[in-house]
Image 1 (cartoon, rainbow, N blue to C red):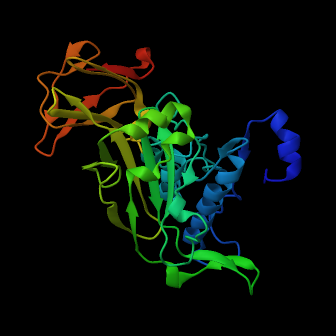
Image 2: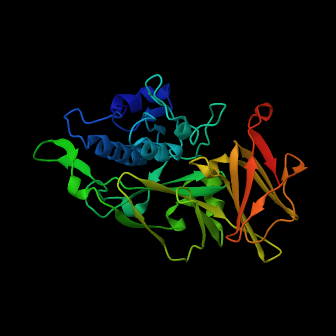
Image 3: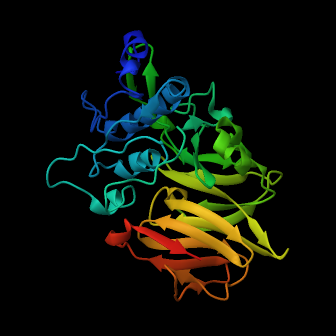
Length: 327
């Protein structure tokens, strides 16, 4: 695609973005029925590792996909944290709008990460396509937190005898992996470096809808991930009030990139002021129930559960551009 020398020497004078992967293939042109699965894994690996090089010069573009594909959710999870554009090539009338709404706001904008995604260091010089052990993990930043996506891409690779990419069905199995907050390279971007200095973080599992606490010295989180599936781990600094109350905003959980929905965050003596874009379920970690909660200046009902989840329904208001003020 845009990986030739001519593009880097000449094309980048006019264009600041470039494709980092091969084409999206709906199915294997050679007739392997499992190609609908393993071709998506190859695409994701190409985009991840090519971003490591091309991202130093341009904004990586992870290409389109189709929302009605059998692995559309797998693709959507990676696009949500790729930091680049999101676009589809659906046939007219064949759309999964429920999936699209997890990626895109009603006004067509997206909750975009502020960096480009990079593989975690334990994935470098490994081959998470058919070694039966490695889960692809890519990290990125939002304005107020980090995110790591874990993807089981096992089941395909280059066959040196046949000289082509093909499926390796013996590798298409669940994989055990770990994830840790220190795998986010906070110092890679100046405006994110302070986020890596927290004493404690809350971790939100986007697909499992679970929360846990983690410190830089904690044990890694262990997981088992099924073939062609993923999990997105959001890491947000924990703020302490009065020495005992802990709080951390997660964002809108109906979006894949929950942390990207938080536009502004200010801590004041009495609590937090949060500006959120989007409509849906707002989630925060709160060790105690708030005395009150306001939405756009009006006190509203909220739900606080024993598992320390604070939730609130946020409506999309066109006149405000979908932006709501919470506090």
